[in-house]
Image 1 (cartoon, rainbow, N blue to C red):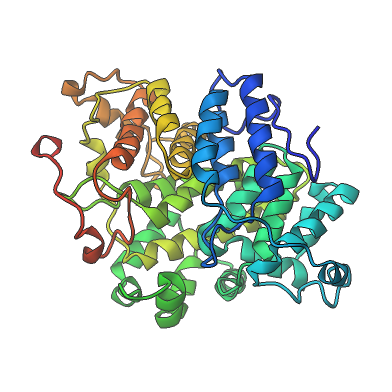
Image 2: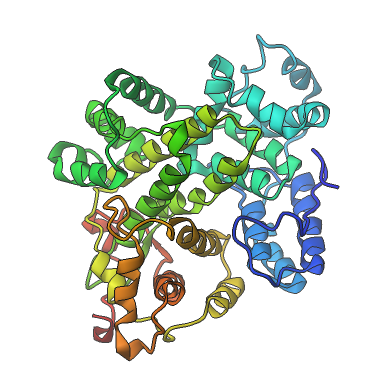
Length: 459
């Protein structure tokens, strides 16, 4: 049984989206390598704060049907460059028990292991559900300090937490909480000030895609991030146009009575600006930073289903995600999403089945970003399917996908699933293509200079 210190992947919790072919043998293999990672490896693999993605990668490919040998191979590929845990400092661990010194070591990566042990002990006593409610969702100063850090560093702590909840792994929840507290909190003022502005306005909510359009039409905000900014949200958007960013973001709000709809809207909007951020005639590539907005989106279905999270907390989690996505979009110069680039794309191998696409990504050697993207996209189709074609909040929708099916030369069956497969083929083709796997800063001309033009047949 999974516990605060023991990872045990179960067929009872295979993920929000998983293939039917998941096996107990693969669950056992995933448990073994994840336990080794949990016991031996730091959450950062270098001093620059680059994240250990092993838990994300292994749980994703497990859900997509990876064999035990594939799980072991992918783990070995990414194990090689990990750092060992820092030794636990028992004096510091004792200080974490006191409320006045609990936050003393926040923002410092070298104390990740100390916080990990602390949260493991708390979860062992109370269960991870109560610990999340107490330490992250309580809406006091301590909880807010941890909550905003969940959205730091391109959503990495929140993604980690999502995996822990989705796959019912208390030890991974402990990792996520410890990871969050050692991140800095510069995103916090933006999220909390946007929350205050939204509460003050009390107007009706605009849609996320309307706000994306507004951001793109605002020359000050659109150009606030500069190519040479070290962090384009912190040093660009929030340094040069913070009031504009807050004003636009606060126009999107979530009522606890509309969580399902707003979750689908968030997912759809993230896919829209991520998939459409192309630069013809350059190669098809996905923006590395936008991609995290899609990869994180799947976990909001798990949050939505969690009966132990109060509806008002679910609404707050979702609002913060929408507001982060809007800032992320602005920070890459807000490129116009070119939906026609998706609609006319020809997969390199023709229209493939889902199984064929997943098989390709299971063999693809990376740290899990590609497999997470594909699983999140496939999940997005399921969540967005119930919403009407005519709903303007959903620009990735049935009618659009069906247009792809009219491209007769692709030999595609006109069904929603096969239409979305074309979009997924675009994603897998892009990471298998030449050049860097991801473009970084899709709205900047400089970001595309290293990429060649696509073959004329793709135009």
